[in-house]
Length: 381
Image 1 (cartoon, helix red, strand yellow):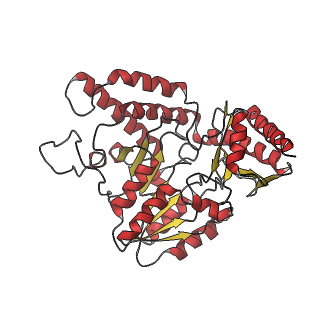
Image 2 (cartoon, rainbow, N blue to C red; image 1 turned 180 degrees about the vertical axis):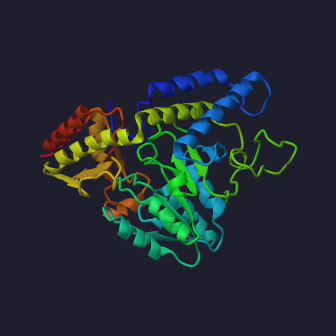
Image 3 (cartoon, rainbow, N blue to C red; image 1 turned 135 degrees about the vertical axis):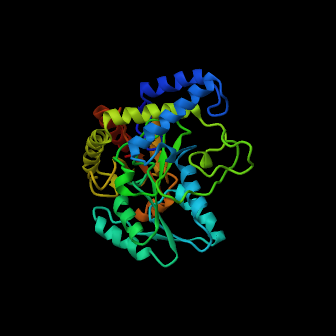
């Protein structure tokens, strides 16, 4: 199979990740819950992963790194653990449902929201749009760093500066950017970084990270055993225990550490360059193919991450994806859990076919995709 659905989850996983998960199965003891040697070794594995993530993202301390089930759970912790009745939040017009669904539910509790317009290729206008959306009740800016549909980057570093100018908090959804765009929390001053472990970091599914980069720690959504201060019925106030109740996903976290190390060795900017070469190759071929609809100009580094969405004119995106699958090509079609981004481009009725390469994708894979698309279009004539 030619796998081009890496924005959903990267495949294949690097051998170093597979090895780390396999080794961790030999540490099947509950970390932080017992004093025997096997439990201590499991705790050490968790600590090493926390330290690796802190170093990779420039966190102040490994204690600020909290492991979650995925990026969605990290975002829910931030939104529901910080916002209170009467608060206003500013988001971009292309947020994933991981942001929009929690906010929609919280509207019943008195939360209000404004979606700011994003201008591809013009960060100054984007910043001005967010500034105009801020009002006296605004508590937080919540923003994706890169659209999972269009690949459009949002200047979250500048938005973080804008948030702090107004005394606001800044939360970033880095599901599509972590591992491709270098992120330094010391420089950006992003308050809450939400990360998917299984995408650009090449870790296993069921892993995510929330890094708290400010004194205001979100309230808990879940309370329970942490292995610390067990005599008290009160949830610990200190990170990471406050946000990590229950037995952790040791195997996934071990694999995630290996994934981060894989990305660090290969360098995010080098991985992005490789993937951009492929996306531009695809874009240029589709641009000159009659019957293909492209929604944006050719993606440019600095303004996009390497994702491309398109359609065959007159065809439903899901149908196109199913036909590609019959040729052994895996892509993602539909609304990608992000109807807001599709409304932005008027594609909410049809969805789009999304192609997202990885470090393992080859130029021949892209050429095969183009060839098969042309074959499908010939079949329809």
